[in-house]
Amino acid sequence: MAIILKSPREIELLREANQIVARTLALLTEKLEVGCSTFFLDTLAEKYCRECGAEPAFKGYRGFPGSLCVSINEQVVHGIPSKKVIVKDGDIVSIDFGVKYKGYYGDAAVSLPVGKVASERLTLLEVTRAALYKGIAQAIPGNRINDISQAVQEHVEEHGFSVVRQFVGHGIGSQLHEAPEIPNYARAERTPKLLPGMVLAIEPMVNLGTHAVDVLRDGWTVVTRDRKISAHFEHSIAVTEGAPLILSELSV
Figure 1 (cartoon, rainbow, N blue to C red):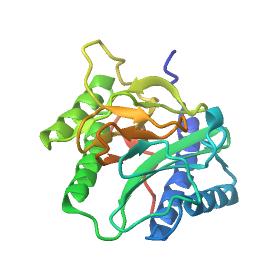
Figure 2: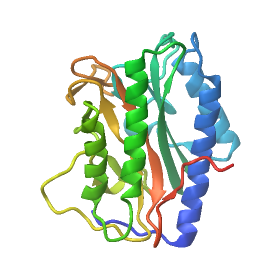
Figure 3: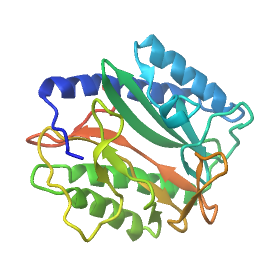
Figure 4: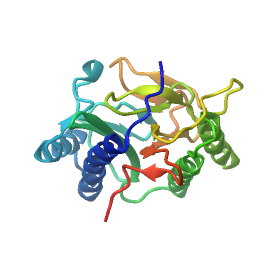
């Protein structure tokens, strides 16, 4: 699949879509607390998204039932919101959200601590967030996708954690998932060169233990094989002639 370069006008529309995602994640961060259900978070996200004139991108995508992916502790990605899933003190809650707005998609994710959280878990969050920004820093013309992947992997493994290999980042634009794939680990093969106009969703998924994961019987929820916790951060960015532009970082 060819990589689609976006025009300045398309990048502006992608920025608008991603700002809706950023504001939604900020709202959810404010409302997340011990005792709330993941269904409550899902309802908030969909309501706010629609008030902004956008559609929740994940709802119905390949049959996914929610607007949000909400993954707790050992769940890596694609957790299904439910009234039965209640957030507890000490949990790590990963929220992945996407919208479609004026024909273009936004996509970002954040992992959040709830209540009193063990220091090891907080370190995992800090390392995963930093790995995302180290990957973003490599998204400059002349570099290759592998430079992003390598920066993420090196930072994570320096701290003794592991990157998930089975799920990867992706291009984004008028489709939620476009070429190229962006693994969080370096590969031996030659990967695409980065060019201005590329828009990429970079999303490290980092595990406390093994990188191996399984998919639960619901067909969606991805969990760590050793059931140790995981964290997930994601931004959609545009490659420019200069520094990368983080489209999903909340504007003030």
